[in-house]
Length: 381
Ligand code: NAD
Ligand code: ZN
Image 1 (cartoon, protein in one colour):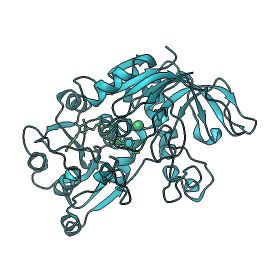
Image 2: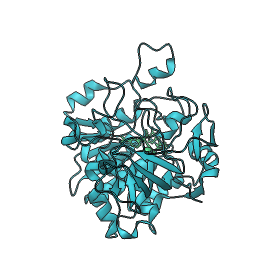
Image 3: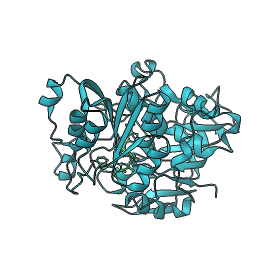
């Protein structure tokens, strides 16, 4: 089958790889119809992880079930399914509590929790930027989609990761009706956090970035765009909140954050959040911070180190929630919002490409080229 493989830093290629197939009785085989490029793929793409060359990327997958193992009871051949990026078992201590991002069965590193498709350090699982994908524990890891899924793939495809992730960030930030919320990052994840804050009836949603095309998308759904290349985001948020600060804040950038002057400073957004969220306010962090590996001679692993003003955070009595989104926990409700027309996450889609053009999609998305906000790939043509 054809698949997009990692070939080294900023090198990806569409190649022939061995066909995905049912390996265990509980597996489901899915023919991928839509698979998205995500900011998380860039951690591997840019060479910041120990991703092995030859591995297939892609964790934002949906498609049609073409085969089920003998131990699969619920999912049927012909179903259109969304596949949460977290691969989880459904029966471990964490999964039983809905914490499927922290599954204890599927990871290979016993000191970590959670696994994902096509990801460095999150298990051996192959990605879905390919014609077919093996889905472990298929009954648990497939969300069977409503009737209109085949025609509305650009909306439903957001269920595998970024819509639940944006929602999770607002959950971690405890966004309440009437709140003012500041969101750092107008990438796909930040825009989904803004959509989620709207759905939760926040009264004021402010989104910080510097790319005009992305800020315009935030504005399209009624958020206030804050361009940090035109002035300190701290001053701008304080002005917009009459000096009170936002009730809550969302970090949707991660350790690759740059400050407006262009120097790398991984903790900048975290410190900005402490400064722009009110005392006793709540902060959600879904932007990825890759763990530091002190044993590694490779200094790249030290990028996870942050200079965080814990003292100010403590004095302000703020609360912070972090981590990967438990996609499964939100899937059913968010799918319902799409089905009923109350959420249309496809408004951020900029490009739909055949799999063959994935390398070009990666390059433009990685450069944050104007107008390349969210790229969907269609391996079926
Ligand atoms: P992206 O790289 O397309 O978007 C990030 C945006 O942040 C860009 O538009 C960039 O201009 C902006 N930015 C950079 N520095 C900034 C700063 N100092 N202040 C404000 N904005 C700044 O990526 P994305 O797809 O939106 O993903 C964002 C992050 O979320 C990534 O770290 C990704 O790995 C992570 N993520 C986490 C989860 C999860 O489950 N926790 C899931 C998906 C993605
Ligand atoms: Zn993703």
